[in-house]
Length: 90
Length: 385
Image (cartoon, rainbow over all chains, first blue to last red; front, side, top):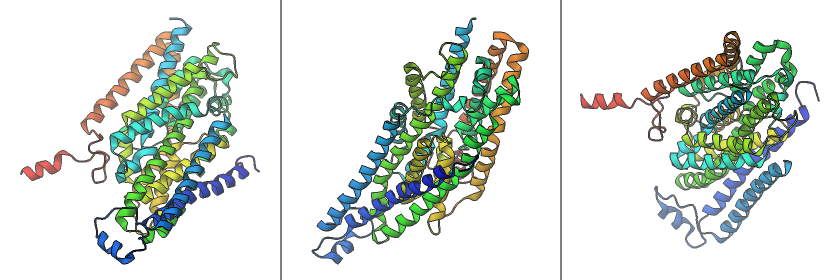
């Protein structure tokens, strides 16, 4: 701890900032990837048929869907917890 | 004109500052969402305004520290607060006109410090506090935000590589609505409090509140409304610079940038640093440009901003000091009125000038051609000839 910079606050901001600020979007990306996994029936078919202007996010894989829901739930829970911390600090 | 009239004038001026704070900073939360099309421009400013309103009520921990930690409160008079606010407002309007996302917090702090120096001399300023709480965090925060955003961007692109680009873009646009909302909320918890702190300071200076008192409810309410209304007006010029000028942004980058901004702002205020949301948001957007391979980062635009940041504290300070000096030389309430008239005149002039090259929700996303205001007329004329 020094007189000008609160080093302990600084490293916590960096570490927690990386976890929340970079980790959560990364988790969101994992969810998105899982969600877009093509379904079991005709895996290649669905991606092909998608063509270029297909912006459907849901691929159809049940496992992918489950993983995606889990990822999005964790992201939402983290955000909710963050808001709770702010309100509780008052 | 008694003290109460002067107090009312200071409160109204503070709310006016809060309003400029709102529209100057809409871009911090919403620029990237507007640029990627995640939200329509008018939906974005309405959402951001509403969340700023809620955010202002969520947390009140920073409120009084903004001024009391930086200047000796016993030397602060209503005239000092008024002159400081004038400095903050003028700098905010000027940078908005130029489309530069400078820090509203620095404008306010600079203005108040400047007018305090003019009134009571340099010893009335807590220089150590100013360096420790304002200047050093201002230097560090964009770098940290940039680092977080660059890491997030890299991870997000790496992970979502297998997803079809169109689907990816669609998915992240949905995510962006969430992350942009968080930044708006964070902005409300942070920036609305700065004006609440200033009004509380004015009430204490006037003897209406005992020193150390918390912000009364009507102060919280009016500040929340002022910043929310300002946000809703949308500072389109600044939004354009942030969303289009710095980096060409795709939705995954937008979400990474907003997440980084929200995390860094909320964490810092948790540790008692009321840092500039503008510096954080700009750092994040630059970081997201660095984190994506092949993305173009317009460093000359970033450089222009950095210069404006360096000037914000001293420039707002000079205006604040000048405003105090003028009010003091003329003396009494007449002095205040003269400063007020000048303030209104400058604000009006800047507004009129801005109408000539207006940026609105209609042209905010136009191709970046090196200027804040898109050249709307020129191409049509060429086509006509």
